[in-house]
Length: 70
Image (tube, rainbow, N blue to C red; front, side, top):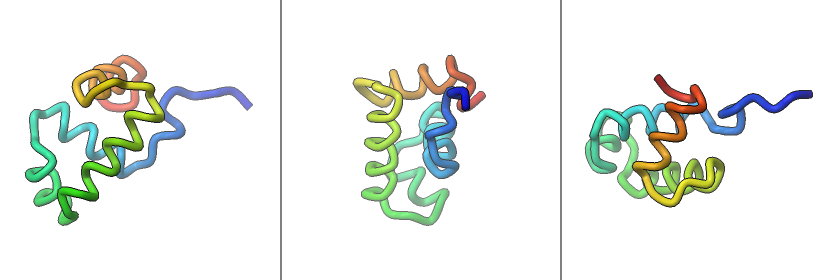
């Protein structure tokens, strides 16, 4: 089985990364998705670990570069 970039990122993480790339804050994303700001932050933390990103900006950039989000 071959590795596909982003296949280890969950659909919810992709959704949150998308909104981050659009410039939304964790609080705004929480409101949009009807989840808590804390939950948003946990998804961001998890996605950062999976993509080895040092911050949210790098996370969004890597997600675009790897075709995880557009």
